[in-house]
Length: 205
Ligand SMILES: Cc1cc2nc3c(=O)[nH]c(=O)nc-3n(C[C@H](O)[C@H](O)[C@H](O)COP(=O)(O)O)c2cc1C
Image (cartoon, rainbow, N blue to C red; front, side, top):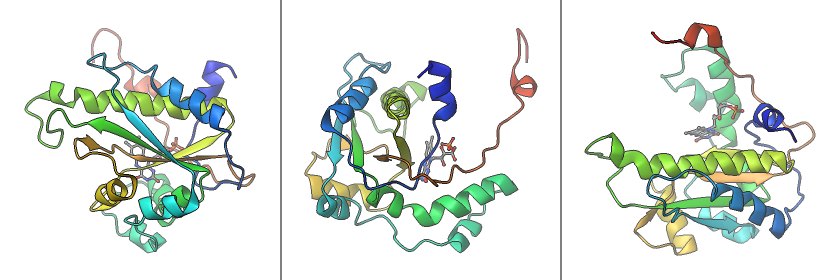
């Protein structure tokens, strides 16, 4: 697929078929993640791929299962109707979009600095780098005909996944990634796309 077609095709997919993903395809997709730029050259990210249903259940035990559209409506930071509609669709799917994905991929980054209390912007470099790898992974999955979704772990979700998979305490999870073959009728939520000309500046703001 042409690079710009991949960019256009990529979107959050929260509904999947039951089709498993071949291991070599998952390896290619994760290989693309390791091609991402990294601040310190180490690329010492790990990825845990969970395909086993019982393991997925254990890993995702902390993710809320019964969120509703009303929970989305109660999110006070939502201001725009398109944004609200997108959250109304996504919020109730937080558990099923991961549980029903062919694989849950858990990226792990080493906590070399306190990213929750950075002393300056450069202390977030390791966090920014792992997110570059996540975008590479997402684009590679799209190019392979698969879809992805993301969930940021909240509350005890990271600790639950740690206990289920046994990754060491020096690592943190930037997000859970659900990946699978999009269901034929999978909803792609409408997006707010800014008018680039209003936000693009040449030489001066
Ligand atoms: C940093 C980040 C955090 C996100 N967190 C979540 C999340 O917790 N749950 C979810 O369903 N989607 C999450 N998303 C996906 C966004 O909702 C989605 O990318 C956005 O609505 C744009 O839609 P698109 O991916 O279809 O273009 C996240 C995306 C990013 C980049």
